Image 1 (spheres, one colour):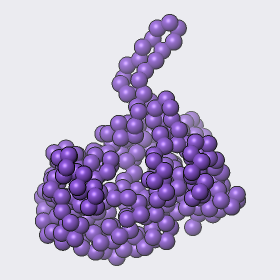
Image 2 (cartoon, rainbow, N blue to C red):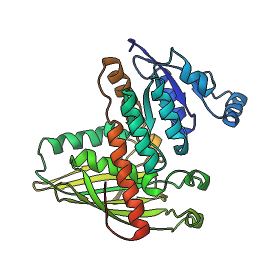
Image 3 (cartoon, one colour):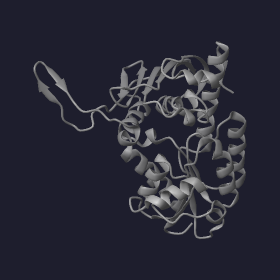
Image 4 (cartoon, rainbow, N blue to C red):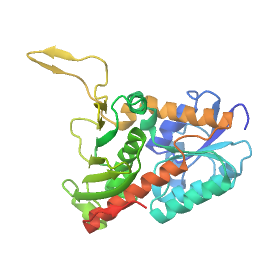
Length: 332
C-alpha cells in the first residue's frame, strides 16, 4: 500500500457523512477522493451542495486504480453486494456494522473477505472509546479477577420505520454493539442466549416481526452470565453503559455527561447528557478510522476484523431466533 491511502465512500447517510468528514482532513495518511450514492440521493446532495467530495458511479469508484480503500456505509441490505465487490477488486474495506442483513449473507461476506485476503475492519467503534478501551485494559490485567457477569444497556431514539424494515431487527441493529462489547470486554465467547422482546413504542414493528424493547440473557464460554437491555426509547438522551463483574471487583464503562462539569444546587446536581450516538462517540469514530488507515499502511490486520463481525452477527441471529421461539439457542 502507498504511504498515503486514497479512500472512496459508498453511502452518504448520517454515518457516511461522518466518516467522509473525518477522511477530509482528520485522518492522518488518508484522503477522500470520491463517494457513491444512489441516483435520488445524488440529486439531493448536488441540489443543496452538501456533497463532501465528487460523486461518482459505484462501478467507477470500485474500478478507480487510485482508490486504495473503501468505507462501506450503505444500507444494511446492500452491505453484501458492496463489500463483496470492493474486496474482489482488491480494495481494503472499512464497513459499518453489520456485515450483512441475514446470517446466510453474513457467512457469504466473511468467506469473500477471507478469500480476497484484503485488509478489513468492521465498525464497532466502542472498542476505540477511551472508557471501553480502559475497561478492557483493566480486565485483561486481572484487576477484577475471573469474569463472572456482564451487563450492557443501550437506549436510543427510534429511527424511522422505513429504516427499521431493512435493518435486520433490534438485536442486529442496536444490540449488536452490546454483543461485541460483551466479547471485547470479557474476552469470552457467547455460547448460548435466551431473548425476549416487546412492542411498546411503534405498533408497525409487529407487521415485520420486530420489537422496540428487548432483553438478551447470555452464557459465556467460561460459565459466566450476562444480560443485554435494548430499547428504542431514550427521552433523556442517548444512554449506554457496560458493567463487568469478577471475583475481585467490577469495572463500569460509562460516560453520560457531555462536559466534565456538573451543577450542584438546591440539594441536587445536574449535567447535560449526550443527545445522539454520533455525538457520544464522535472521537471514537475518528480513532477507529485512523486505526484502520494505520493498520493498512503498516501491513497489519485491522481490528476488529471480519471474524468479530461474524461472531457478533451470529449472536444477534441466535437472539432473534430465541425471541421468536422463546427458547435457549446455542450460538453456532
